[in-house]
Image (tube, rainbow, N blue to C red; front, side):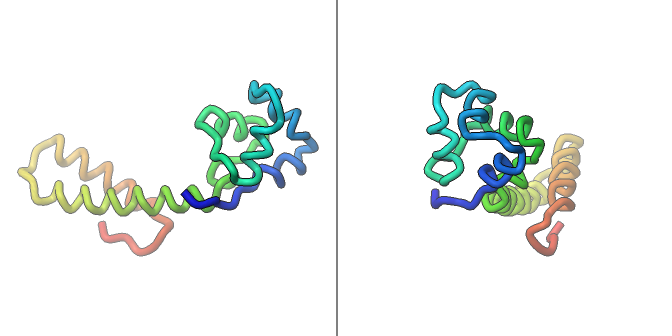
Length: 116
């Protein structure tokens, strides 16, 4: 995965916290992991992303906008594909429920026009 822009450093600075402070709050031994996250050398694990959200009071969408946009784009594309596949299957309550869930995903699409 290519490096993606993030706002960890900017949000950390705005909060007045050091890398060492963030590392301690996230249960890391050193600030090196925070430095790696900020420089896009390493993508944080889910627990670190959630910790950053809590500490910095910023959503993952705001902390990692490029990554969020790429994941959203992929999910939307797969939702469209799955919706298309399900529409050709025999209609059942389960299929109807899945189609409703997929349409809800597609209604939140901020990547472009919906094909729901």
